[in-house]
Image 1 (cartoon, one colour):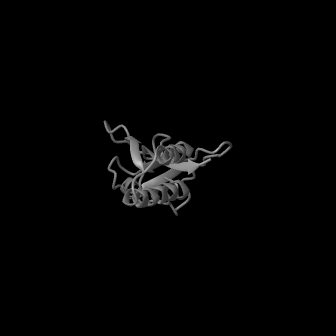
Image 2 (cartoon, rainbow, N blue to C red):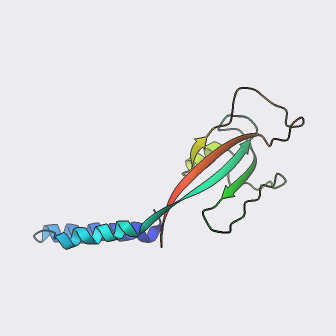
Image 3 (spheres, helix red, strand yellow):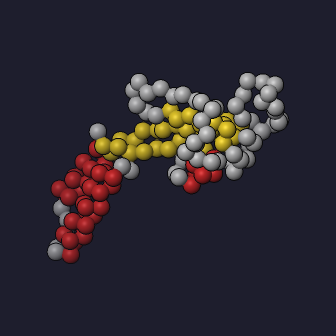
Length: 130
């Protein structure tokens, strides 16, 4: 969840706990929570990680983000050495979820074919307020 929506929900919970202690909550309190939840929207962010092997702890070769923003452009540059993650595992620890693992049926030598390592596709669903 994005922080404003998360904070709104925590604030609502605090207020309702006080109301319960003072005699109860009303239908309007539940309507307020429904409004807060409806304001929350979720977007899917995609992260393509090309790793040296099909192991999630393998070194990153190249990465590319696909952001859910109209007009955003994704560039994959294998010459950049400052990746946000050193491995797929590091990205998982940061909340990314693997939605596609690379084909692991055979090894390849990237000198012979035009492929940048083993491609993992990860997603992160993030809430935002409109």
